[in-house]
Length: 435
Length: 182
Image (cartoon, rainbow over the protein chains, first blue to last red):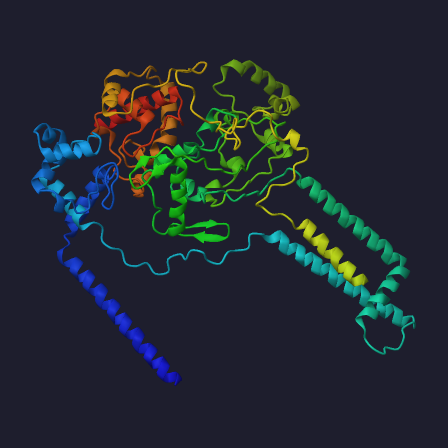
């Protein structure tokens, strides 16, 4: 019976694969038959460089969708329109005026530099489109098994607890042996855990050395726990709240190489580096509604693939009140409730522009390798000691600062150094940051 | 019974020092000293429930600032700005230098290092169809208009740049265009 079942299964698989091979074979051969690759390539290049800022093949953008445009319009009309649509409209062509009105009078640029051949290449590309990519096997599976978010410290603690238990058991064994050697041991009638532990307790009570050791141990552990807890108060190193949108700095500033200050633009002028408003997102995402194929983000222990990430971009549209179908703002906006990570207490003054613009520091100096983070976390402890360490070490660039030249010179002589540090300039005075 | 107590004590001890959940912030000692009385930028609560970072009142000018841009975002407005607006800043070395620095933050991703529309995002085919500066008939005024209102798929960059920075960028863009036209 088993072999029969296996056999029928095999045949099924064979038939299926044959069908697939036939299907793909046909589709590929039919494509390769009438695809003029050089023409398509040339057209694609021109389309990407000249047309793609306003047109897409598969949907409406600033201008109409262009896929299959050759079926909808005469070739001669298209040539005239692309070369100089204003002239075509001026000549009283009804279709041309209708298109112009439909798109609220946003005029298309004229392309007199294009030859008929080039325009036909572009039109050819709009008809055939991009070659269909083969199905990518082993694409990143979304919703995979999550990794443990806790990290290593927990693991070490369990080990520690285990070690303590083992130590206690060893002491118990030792005590038992001591008792036996002293001859106090009763003949072992039955091995009873409860009785053993009772003996251990009795032995502990009798042994002064062990008592002192245990007290010391408890006190030390207590001190460790107490200090550990107290020193963590207000220190949020590693804090990484789950943001409302799975925004990945790794994708934006790492892979796409967008400058930090493109979005955090107030860092150069203001105390705050600021969380960008949604319209900054929309500067790019008006165009980019879908992530590129194969983009993945590690988010809360889950691997987000294209499907999930496209939904995250849709959240931006909801916030901005953008209608991605009709490409208009509806005015129904909803602020994104980003959760703030870095927060200095109010009694400490910190100014981003002083550090970014005047000091010329890289953002990564304090914020860590942000361009590698899917989930943003607080890299530095942001404690006073951490501030002061840097102020003690960092030398001040005095060039091009005529106003303070004399003071700088005197200070350098006073401290007998070539370049004064921030600390020597007064960067450690209480009033510089606390007032 | 004693062993049970011991185990419980150990468990409590372990759970106490192992609670380092990265999703929750640590305890604040005396929150009064942490949270400022004035409104924070981008505060969730805002001013009377309204967002803090809202538009300034129409017709107001900040101290040391400039009147807001009032040419409408229409094709006519574009033509008007193209002819009428002139760069108020001199094309000095300092202005060009800062213009370059700003260009390399805000424009370079798409428009490219040389202004030929061949920036990184364009090369990676994430943002396509970026025009070459030399193919477009642009003036200082038209660039300023586009920086304020955006054009086609380019969004407004007025919020990210100050008045002076915009004009400094324009000096640099004009220099790039002149180099491309050579």
